[in-house]
Length: 76
Image (cartoon, rainbow, N blue to C red; front, side):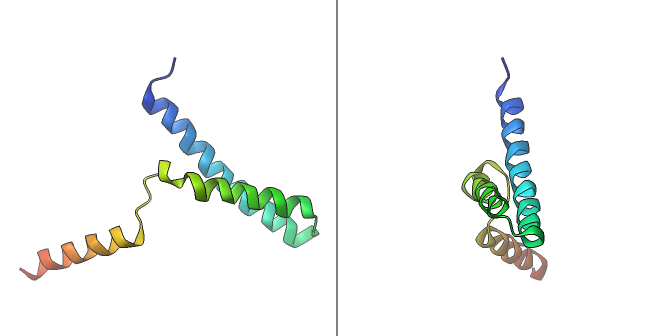
């Protein structure tokens, strides 16, 4: 049995792999114009979009809040 951290790292790796494979398949679609590459690439990027909450990527609002907090800290 895997513990939670090992299981989560496998999910994170699979999510990033889907993003890179999606970009690669969209590039192949641009080069060869096979519809299969467009469909698979779109699905791979869709997996990354809908499962990115497993990743620790901050949202734009979190980045702005951290920037404002740091700016207030340095102004004091």
